[in-house]
Image (cartoon, rainbow, N blue to C red; front, side, top):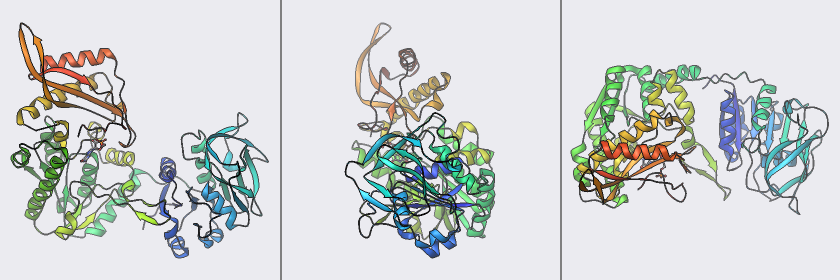
Length: 518
Ligand code: XMP
C-alpha cells in the first residue's frame, strides 16, 4: 500500500479522463483512475482518497440507469470536483435537476464570466474579466442542488461553475484538463491545495517505494527481463537490479535489425556500466534467414514476433528457475476505461515483444512502471542515473529496421540503411533538432534510380528520410526542416554512403500515413 496522499478519479468514460491524471501528476499528486462501476462504498473506504474528481462521460444523467457516483462519496468528508458529466451527476444526486438539449448544447470554445463572490478554487481566474474554457455537453444543469452557489456562467451554461463551499463540493460544466481551457491547470492546482495535498509524489519517493515493493513481491526468486534497449525496459531493468541485484538476468535479443552500433551500446551500458547479468543473444542469422525472400509487411512482423518469443524462451530457460518476468508496462496501458456502450472494457496491452510468454512459461509479472506515464519514466530514469542521451532517445520499433526496408530485406540493404540513418541522425543532432523531434529515421526504398557521380553513371538505391513530431505516436505531423538542412543532409548521405544516389523527404503526416513505412 502506497504511503502517498491519494486522489481518486472516478471515470464515467470521457475521452479525456487520462488528461485529468496528467494535470494532477504534473502537480506531484498521486492519483488513480477507476471506472465508476468498480467504485463502490467498500472500494472508497479502502482507497482512502484525500479528494475525488468525477470525470466527464458520454451518457446522459437523464437516462434511467445511467452511471452514478457511490452514495457514500457525499459523506466521506473529502473535497469532490465534478467535471461535465461528473458535475451533472453530482447535481442530480444531491437534489438538483439536469435537462437535455433544446438549444443549450455547447461544443468547443466558450467564455465563462464570474458571478458571485470569490472562490478559492478560482484563485488566479478572471483577471481579465472572463476565461476561455472548453465545453462539450448536450445536457445542462437547470436547477442547482441545495447548498450550492453559482460562481461562473457562460451563454449556454448558466451554472458553468458552482460550489457548496461548506462541504467542499465543486462542479464545473467545462473540461479544465484540456489545453483549450488555458487556466485549467490552475484550477486543478487550487483544488488540490484546498484539499490539503502537499505534492508528495516525487520520483525519489517513488524509487524507494518501488524498490521495497519489488523486494516484497519477488523474495529470493529469480527474475528475467527482456531488454530491448528502449527507455521503458531499460528503466525497469535498472530499478529491479537496484532492488534485487543479481537475482535479475536481462536477455537482449539482437535480431540483426538494429541500428549502427546499437547492440554494442546496450551491452556496454548494462553489462559494463551497470554490472548487470546480461545475456546478449546474437540471433541475427536466425532472423535474417527466416526473412529471406519475405516482402509482405505483415508476414515480416509475424515472423519476427514468433522468432523473438522462441529465442527469448530458449535463453530465459537457460537462466534456470526464474519465477518472474519483468516488463516495462506503463500506466496508459493498464488504465481500465469505460466503453461507450456503457459497460466496462479492460484494455491491457502487453509488451509486444514478450506478449503471451508469462502464461506459456508459467511466470508471474513484475511491472514496476505500471503507475507511471512516459515522461515520468524518463524522470525516473534520470533519478536512477541513466545517461540523458539514452533517456531522450527516439522510440524504435520492435521489428527494427525490417519495417524501414519496404520489400525484401537483404544484408546489403540493411548495411546501407544503417550508415545512411547514422548520417541523418548525426545531422539532426548537429543542428540541435534531436529533442524537438519525436522520431526521425531513414528508410531504404525498394527501387533503384539513375544518377551521375563524377564522370560515371550510377544506378543505386533511393532513400526516404522521415521525421515527425507527436505526443504519443498515435497522430503525428511531419517535421518542417529548412530546405538548407534537407539539401545539406542529402549531399552528405550521397557523398558518405555508397549505394545511395537519391534522397527523398517524406512530408506525410499521420493520418493518413503511419510513422513507420510498414
Ligand atoms: P506507426 O508506424 O504505427 O507507429 O504510426 C507508431 C509508433 O509505434 C512504433 N511502432 C512499433 N513499436 N513494435 C513496437 O515496439 C512495433 O511493431 C511497432 N510498429 C510501430 C513506431 O516506431 C512509432 O513510434
